[in-house]
Image 1 (cartoon, rainbow, N blue to C red):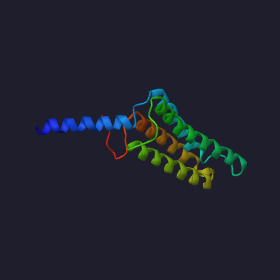
Image 2: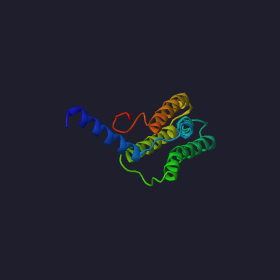
Image 3: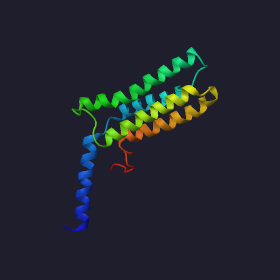
Image 4: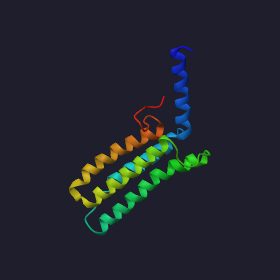
Length: 143
């Protein structure tokens, strides 16, 4: 077997493994999930201190949950239960980032609102790219 054939076969195996752990999802579902994630980040630092800020934080938590549960529900519908491989790493990263943004947003004042709005846009784009398969954990793009 020559080098090119071996490389092609290894790429096929890698693509099959990635497709099994996180299959491509419909664009509309990915966009909705990314919108929820971005809005959750943007809302984390909004509102005046007190009840208004607490309401925005609760809305951010609900949006983060929706951003995570929508792809999980679509995976379950396709017969994939649980998370293994890259999918587990991506979900752990999403959870850590969401918690850290909620903590820093809840302790920050209104002066951070614009920064969190910008972070929301960046988060939405990154989450959409990851769900569509452009980005995967480990920095290797899917073919």
